Length: 213
Image (tube, rainbow, N blue to C red):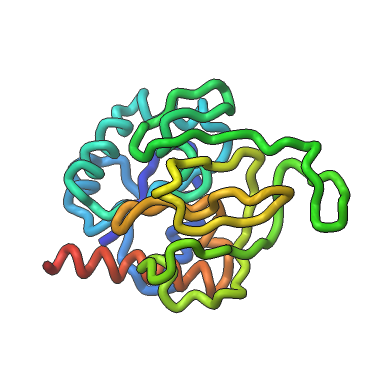
């Protein structure tokens, strides 16, 4: 069973729908015991980084999440759940979780797109990945030309060794980060059709393998 972290700042229901479609057992929960007993943890998020961190801290879920990472529980962060795994977010001047070294930065609206026009902030719509670490388990079987759905004004800038894939939007930014078993994506796999479902299935397959080892 996968636990979907419930902290009043996420897109938990849409993630659960995608997992239900894949027949992956899951539960939206804030219960530390259920989270600890799960095979893996999905950490979704929408909205502002500051509000998300406030919700986590008020419920003690920041420490629950860190404890699961220390215990090497597989984890997948999504959107804001990706950003606040870093040390710091410029949005709301937010001290984040420091699970992965790096910070989250605001897109510069003066950046230009491929046509020489100023980019629109937020970055909203479909975009592709430039895979930097081939063979990463999270992206197994994902078509190199696949596009994923993005909605964000801030982008993750982790330590370079954690960059798995990038995306171009006025600049090249990190869109998939982490290491084996600790992944985070800036886009919404649950809203990205077949490629997103493949990514979620890959995460669950890894969770099962670790759980049964």
